[in-house]
Image (cartoon, rainbow over all chains, first blue to last red; front, top):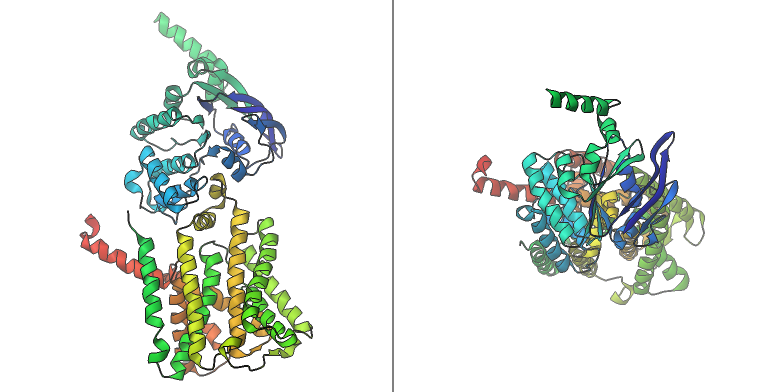
Length: 250
Length: 329
């Protein structure tokens, strides 16, 4: 579905993406995880056309996305959400989602109708006529999701849609994302909330300092010593192993 | 679901029905002239509102389009003998083309906000200097359009004729903006105004959207110029391309309510009432109205950023607030 091959991107001396390659299978939920500043969002920005990679290729359904504008990529069926939510603050929730719905629907009535259906699906139904600026953090995250979903994407890139939510709100959003996959949309997500990653994804990649350091099922990744070191610092895996052995002996 | 769209349509209809018989009821030449001028500035403000209010692109040089339209008709009429109505159409097309050229340049290079405002101002100034330097535009002396009374020449013998012409144009623009609020193009334009990157992520092409808006806005402002020439029978570079027309064009919708259907109309009538009162109180001191406008603009931005239209909505919101039982709602 989506093939990323040898993707590299430098910002001056900083290597944001270093020969990153991965393939997203159709119908799957995959996760891109890694510590803060690992370059996850930069990869999303390159897939969605906001940044141009220095090297490498991105292919969606066999065709290269390189050099295409964000609007063109969205037209092809790749929709993204923003980590820092970007609502159209002056418009209502309904009007916000309708902008996405208009991508494949010229008529206002059809777009508003679709917007309403999408809003129900992500649990924004009661807030349809509120101005987007009046939503809570959780509401805005849902709105991001709804706007992207309204464009009828084949592949949905979700950039930390659970960050800043409390556990109850996360429990609400997990089935929504699973439902989106069941409706036939492939999902690639960036997430820090490990419970969600474990719960949702079929496959995960770990990014650290711009390079992929691990790939596998969430369970495999959680046990990978390199991953533990990336998150907890050098020597952490060894110390954890030590602690585990001591716990067994005690 | 609420239906604000239908409400706006009825409001336009009522507006038309109330104003249509006005010239038959108001015998005073002074008030009819006042209402005609207010309608003229409402029309110019509607043009600006399309791009500035709905598209968020604040032009500081809408005189560029107004002046192009005005000169187009005047030159065609004087040098070629083209009928004023045909000149009106040519003016709109020519100003639309100028809009396309400006928009293409400015939006291609992604200029936004104050940079966009400055470029439009600079373009208007360039055109003012050009109009000042050529014989066929009458250079600094300006152009006197020959008096050819008759509706066929768009030079009505009574003020009522101009009033009705402008009323029809204003109503057409009200309907256009009403349509815009219920169309895909309008939704995209407002999305670009609110957040260009987010709009792109949803498949909106901001370049095309803004380009279309500046073409439409320019064409309307150009047609306003064509009417102006028939109304005053005179145009010179200062009137056509000077900053005062640009300021009127942007002040009217800002005072009335940016990005609203009725904002420019409300703003034009309010502004011209105030300007008229200012003239009565302070006399005809040159430049005083601009001082007054400046003060007004500061007050509006500070206390009523949503314009007079926002005041109405604010009042409506308050009423609802108290009906529901205040803070407990």
